[in-house]
Length: 132
Image (cartoon, rainbow, N blue to C red):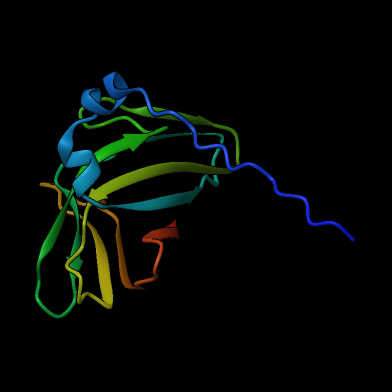
């Protein structure tokens, strides 16, 4: 049976795209926390404060919140209509390389900030947590 050689096609990369990407995006890793809030009333208002962070359990090092999707930043509110599970995404700066367990902390100047303790680190730095 004859051997058929398949040509290798290398995609071209537009250099203008590469130069338009911020260098911190290429060098920095992020932590993605998918949050699920179970709304048990007909209408609920929720929001996240920019003071929310991840805290390494051993060193106390903090990873800052850099972006949020599907939820408003305080002082604005997001309305959840109907009894359902509402999801949103929080993106944080990188955790220390040696971090094994961390907490999700919403540090706010009033009662009601959320706290999810003892999240075990994984290789992807993508997490799914329930907000109580």
